[in-house]
Image 1 (cartoon, rainbow, N blue to C red):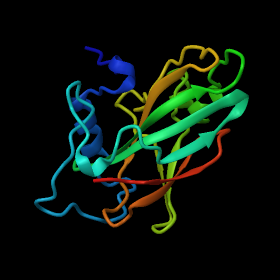
Image 2: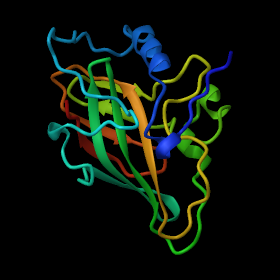
Image 3: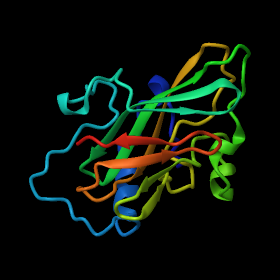
Length: 192
């Protein structure tokens, strides 16, 4: 049986069973040695009816803005830590240009396994300057990145909701830098 991630509701849903397997499978990778504290509340995932908690801020609030080529613009509106050991960064990818634009393949990064799965935001990284670590986008068991994938061409002024999931930095790290190939960088505060 093959399990496929779909981007229902504009990339806001995810398959929990596979994410849980990945999180537990990657527990030793890039964790920074910070164990979760017992009793720490967990935030909800990207379920179809989930609402952001008050601590996560207004969903329309801008945490960071990254400018890219051909008028592309990434507005980051949420970066939330989950008790399962990962961080989900979400926002909107917009074409601020005057002409339609194809999302560049370079955003997928340069890893063969991710490139093989088509266009994605698989080249994104979170950098924890305090802990001196870089966190790469998580993948499922078949090497597909846990990000929005298969981008359509964006017409002038058109936006597309996007998300990326990363291993969580230690609990005392609240601020990270989001990097995306061909885009400016942006500092993002993690909630939760």
